[in-house]
Amino acid sequence: MTFVRIRPIPQSLVLLYALGLTLIILITLQGESHARPILLKSDQQSYSLTPSLSVWVDNKEEATLEAMLAGEYNDLFTPVGNSAPNFGFSQKSVWLKFEVENPTEKTQNLLLQLDYNLINRVHLIYQKPNGQTESILTGLNYSYHNRPLDYFYYIFPLKFTPQEATTFYMNVQSAYPYSVPLTLGSYEHFSEARSNRAWILGGYFGLIIVMMLYNFFLFITVKDRSYLYYILFILSFVLFQIANFGLFLHIFPNATWLNLQQRGITGAFAVVFAVQFGRVFLNTKKYLPVLDKLMLGTIAFSFLCISTSVLLGFQYATMALTIIVLIGSGFQLAAGLLRVIQGYKPARYFFLSWTLLLLGSAIYQLWSFGVVAYSVVTIWAFMAGSACEVVLLSLALGYRINILKQEKMESAQLAAEAKAE
Image (cartoon, rainbow, N blue to C red; front, side):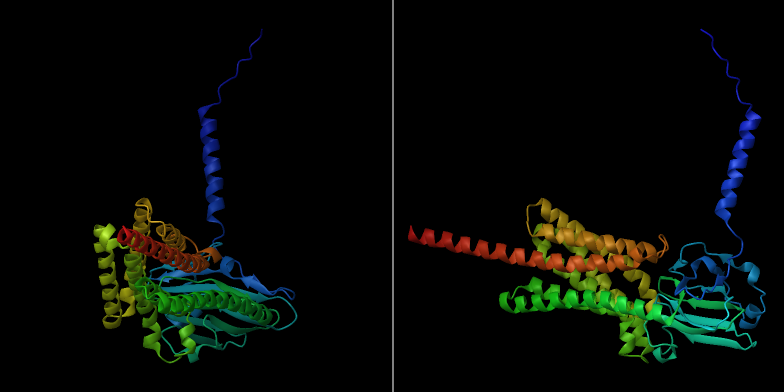
C-alpha cells in the first residue's frame, strides 16, 4: 500500500492568506466613505433616505449655517449605513446631510417625512437652484402651527426641478430618545401611509377604550377596588400613548410647555396605577410583604418623577421615567410569578399579560438607549404588548371575581350546614 506524503503548507503562505482575508473583510465592512445621492425616477413613489444619509455630531454646538452651506464641515460627515440613525438619550446637536438629484425631464413635487415626533428641534436647510436658501424650523419646542403640514410627524413639501441636484442639511436635537427615519415620497404615497396608520391607531385606541368602558360598568356592579385601579391605569396609559404619538398637539397646538410635560406626567401616573392595581389584585401586602414594600417605593418614585418634570423640566424626568417603567414592570412580573407558584390561579393571566407588555417595553427601551436599531418592530412592539396586556388583565379580573363568588358561596353553604347541625 502506497502512502502519499502531504507536504506542510509554509507558515508564510498561511500568514499572507490570513492578512489578505482580513483586509477583504475590513474593506467590506468599511463600505463607501461618502453616501450616494438619491436619484429620482418618474415611476417611483417612495425612497428611503437612510442609505444616502451622512451624519455629524456637533459636540461643541459651534456649527454655523453659513459655514455649513459653504461646505466647511463636509469632511466631518460619515455615512450612517443601512439602518436609520438612532441617538438614544443624546441631547447633542446632530447634523444630517443628504443629496437628491432629479435626472428626469419633469418637475417632481414630493414630501420629505421624518417618521418620528418626539424631537425638540428639527431644522431643515437647503439651497434652491436659483441660489436662494430655504430654512424650515419646527419641533416640540415650537408651536404646532410652525409645521409645514398639519400632521403629528414632520412633513416637508419639496420641489425638485429637472436636471438639478439639491443638497439638504437637517439639524436635530432632543431631550427624548430618538431616531431619524427619513423617507421621500409622493403625495399619494403619503396619503396611503397616513390612512394605514390611522386604521392601526384607531383599532388600537378603540380596543383599549372599549375594555376601559366594559370594566367601568363591571366596577359599578361588583364594587371591587381592583377594577377601579385597572380603569385608572388604562386611562393614564391611553393618555400616555396619545402624548407619545403627539396627538395632543391637535388639541393644544400653542401649549408648548404642556406638550413637553404631558408624556412624562401621564407615563408616571400609568406606572402608579399599574403597580397599585398589581398590589390589590395579587394581595401582595399579605402574601408578598417584602415585594409589596418595593412596589410602594416604585409608586413613591413615580410621584417624585412627576414633581421633577414639573419643577425642573421634562428632560430630567425622561430618563428616570424610562428606568422606572422597566423597574415597575419587573416588580409586576415577579409578583405575578410568585403568586402563580403559591397557587393563585388568576395570577396566571396577570403574569402572562405583564410578560407580553415587558417584552414589548424591553424592545422599545433598548431602542431608546440606542442598543437596537429603529425598525417597525421596535416602534410597534410596545403597542402590541400593551394591547394584549389590556385584554388579558380584563380576563384575569373576571376570573378573580368568579373565584371570589365561588368562595363566598362555599362559605355561605358551610355556614348553613353548620347552622343546620
